[in-house]
Length: 603
Figure 1 (tube, rainbow, N blue to C red):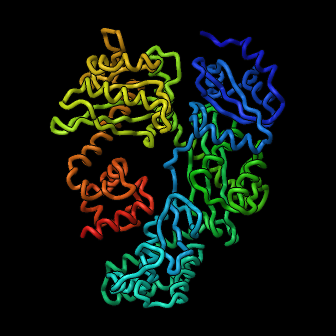
Figure 2: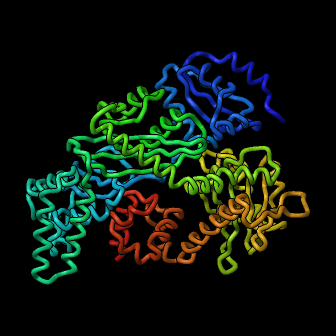
Figure 3: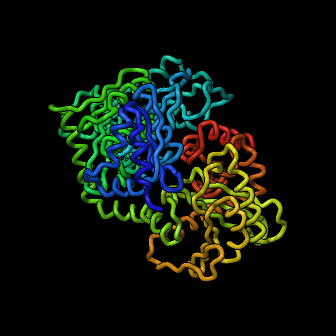
């Protein structure tokens, strides 16, 4: 079925000249792109005029079979609504940031009588935050430096209390507030010095480190001297020497965008206390005008990294910059200014950021192209190979696994737009099949998956565009009727020859082992295998977990898997500190405290 040009033309005539959000739909009524507009009539018409478009936008337009729109009372509401809808629907042609792409911050819990210091990746209300830390600055090493210089506590809890001091006190690394060995005013003086260090004034700490390093050399404690030398190097990275003489009060985020005919690159340059502390390049494979891509990226960026600088610098003006400025000011609680510097050091910062984006785009073009071919390009090729006239935005794979012939479980991996979406991975314990029977187990698990489509869990209520079953004809035959009755496409991938089987077809689809479509299927299948293996690790140590991790409040199978994947053994988890536990994806401060307290009581 081709595009119904008359339908689109008639709907274009009815578009209002007001602000709002538009949703582009493919022939299966699936949302493939979401945009915002100050004038819906003018903006949507631009997609269908005869002007030249880049390859990505041309590809998008060729897939548009219909569109819908939502009128908003204000342009600011259009900006916010677009961001929320993109996060909800994850359209194929929109730029998307993964939720787990966050940077570490150092948080000082200043609301505590004797404040603790910790590394976090999620910013919440309360406390004082510094960072994010990237580009050669390790937040963990910086925290180690703080504890090596300042005798502040590393234990948890708002009000430390104990019958006796811990080892840290005997090592002169803590003043012992737990037994009231230090006045609050003296402890707070150290906190003030730490804030001064993290704010960019390293002079005091640098002098202390030099003295300690020289003393260690004189005592021939060379390993200790090397440690202090490494800390000095860390301070140099923290206050990286630069050719631009910036005021030490400048806190700014710089966003620039470079592009060619097909791809683009966004560079983010972070300035804190007058120092360039980080730079990050985000390759852009998606469609959209520069203004749309950059504004959407900025909104998503601050969703994930909510520490907002007082100033945001851009290389050029674009639509909705004033609305973003208003939104960020509201989020921060103080004025945030967005500007396009024309002269001076701020203009040089923008030039540096733009040069970084251009250089990355030039040098990484082959890598960016390969990623595009292996993700979104592979998705298109897979749909073509399967003769499916739809965008395979969400693909799920199911794998049945056994542990020594017993304890059958199933894993579900999820890929969105050709990339793993691990937040939606799930494990199933087979409940109704008492013996090793892959076919019956698959039917049970797939039935439960289908029933969950109408539930509240976002990972299950999202309908897959394609389901892959690990196995051959038999595994496919066991479940295809269930999935087809629900209107879901299904294939199986036989591991022996990597042949693809489709329902009611005797012969398999045989793709070249170099085919990106087959490689995509293999990656999805391998992710299901990997996830199941990690789950097996939990179940193999089931007796230990019954008396340990899974009895801890807030720790379920998914977090237990993540802990084991990171630490490898339960014994290592027992020895881990709160800060070390919080390095594990999904483990909150509350979880870490519960784990430490549990093992402490168990011992």
